[in-house]
Length: 420
Image (tube, rainbow, N blue to C red; front, side, top):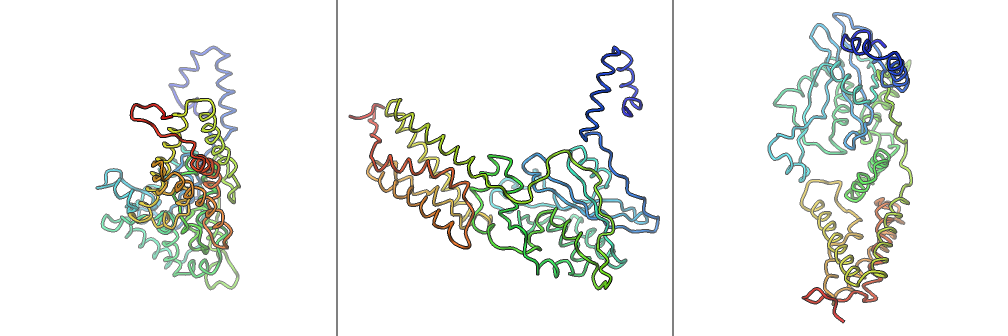
């Protein structure tokens, strides 16, 4: 009840409440604190006036979809220079010129910022996102190299950079800053180690709890995110940077003294910890595909013929439109991760030909052939993972192909009636 004692307004409210209400409020506060919402940030010992400290800060994933990958920063403490700030590279501005056009074309501009550490930590604590801090055992020269680089990066003329989801993001920028401070020792070590998960696997494990967001990413991400990567490339994930730094020894140190001298949690979130590997969740998209197919079957069995015809034609339009968007992402933008997308076999723009009655059987071949080819590609040693999209589209596309082959759709007359 510290808040109640230190807040005059709260004290006045409690004085006016009946005793039963007061006890109820006490009980609620007790439960709330036990649930973790009243956790205090762990205090870090003060640095000496002439001292310097560099910390790697890792913020855990949040509940909102753009927070699922976590975040990180470098925290510098140097009282003599007035430094007690976090430096991070995760900012963008909706007001920048052509913001949405840049976003669509894959040419997003992000920028670096330094702000007081206490403000940064409080923000993430209020957002119920974990805060892990690791004190780096740097030499004076290494610290100066890191500080000078970060101060250079936040200058107005240097702060902007072209953002890439996997190759040049807020985490890889922190990774690169640490590598500069360590004179390349981090990259030398990490480039020789295979990654535990590739780009696709990390994306899946961190987004699999969000049905539509996960499906949208799986639909739009092509083969480039399935390639084999090393530990250095895997550090596009902030938590991987933290783990790799924690396991790294000091360079040229025969005793094997670790680079990280303190590794602690300033704040522990109450949200669930992300899975260490993606789960098999294709079945939930198969259920969705079967439901859509079942709805179409019911409309053909119990409703006028116009319902089934309209349903099938509408799906052809939706499928062709999605396919055209995938082609545009591949050929007309800088989104490298959207290229060579096997999902075009399932959302083939050529399906638009099936709107012409004379070409419906061609449409059936496009639909069925796409599904079969997509499954064959999964048998290759190196392939794009799209089993979730396949589970969704297999019953839908095969059912529609069967309708086209059976020529069950009757053309509509100009007056809107089905011809006989």
